[in-house]
Length: 404
Ligand code: AMP
Ligand code: MG
Image 1 (spheres, rainbow, N blue to C red):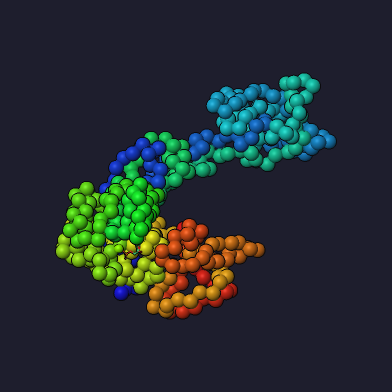
Image 2: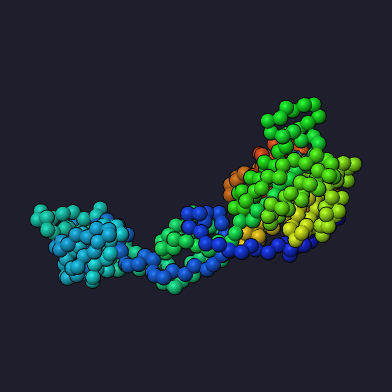
C-alpha cells in the first residue's frame, strides 16, 4: 500500500501531453491551448468613447456647473463604426456614441445626462466639468500590440474564445483529445434496459466515468461490461486496446475477492503495474500501470470509490494528457461542523456540503460515508481532505476542502 502523494507522482510521471491540432475557435471550447497567442494589434484598436454624450476639451468646461453651464457649439455627430473628420476647437463639442473613435483634440467625454440642448439646437449646455481621460477607453487599454494574451496550457472557456475572436484568430492550435476507454466488470451488473433480477444491480460506474471523461474534454469510449471471468475480461481489454486508446479505466474486480480477476489478467497481458493499493478512503483497492504503453487504471467497483479515485488520480492524469497546466481542483479552508472518526493510516476524502456564515465557510457531512452510498456524493459540494495521522476530527476544527 502506498501513500496518495506517491501514487499521484508515479502516475503523473508516466503521462505525456498528446500532439496538437488546429481547430476552428468555436470547436475549441473545453480544449487546451497548445500555442501562445499574441495580439497583432492594440485592443481596443483606437481610443474611443465609453459613453453616449459629447466629446469635449476639458479646458472648455472649467468651472461648469448646473448654475453656470458651459455652452459649446456642436460641430459634428459621430456614431460607433464611423469617425469624425473634424477636430475640436475652443468651445466646441462633437456629439458621440459609445464605441465611436474619439475626435482629434478631444480629451474627454461628457455623459449626455449632464447636458441639455440649447434653444439654438446647434449648441449644447454642459452642467459639469470633466477630467482629461474621463469616459474614454484608450487604444490598447485591454491588450497591447504584441502582448501574449493567452498561454499554452490554458483550458479554453467562453471568455478565452471571445478574446481569440477579438484578436481575429479564426483557428487555434489545441492538444488532441485523449481517447479513454471505460470497462466495468462484475457478474452482478445488469445492463441498462435489462431486467433487474434478484442479486443484480445497475451499472452506474460506466455512466459516471464516461461523463467525467466528457467533462474534461476527452473522448469517452464505452467498452461495456465484462463478467467476472478472466477470459472475458482479457478479451474486452484486448479489444479496448485495439480501439486506439490513450488511457484505459477498468472498474471493479481489482480487489482480493475470489472473483476479482482484473489483477491476474493485467499481469498475464504483460502490463507493467506500478500500484496495487493506495492508502486512501474511499478507494484503497486502486491499481495503476501501463499496458502496451497505455496508462491503465484499476478503479474500485464501489461507485463512490470509483469516482473519488477518478477525481483524485485519473482526472489530473487526463488533464495532463490534454496539455493543461492546472490539473488540480481548487481547495479552500473551512470549519468542520460534525464529528468524524477515521483510520490514521489513510488519507480520507469525505463528502461535505459547504455553507457560508458571516464570511466563514463551514463543511458539513452530507450523510453516511459508505463507499457504496452515491447519494451522499450527489449531495456533496466538496470533498474534505483529511490527511494521514489524524484519527478524529471534531466540530470547530479547520479543514481543507476541495470544491468539486
Ligand atoms: P468490486 O470492486 O468488484 O469488488 O465491487 C465492489 C462493489 O461495487 C460491489 O458491491 C459491486 O456490486 C459494486 N459495483 C461494481 N461495479 C459496479 C458498477 N459498474 N456500477 C455500480 N456498482 C458497481
Ligand atoms: Mg466485482
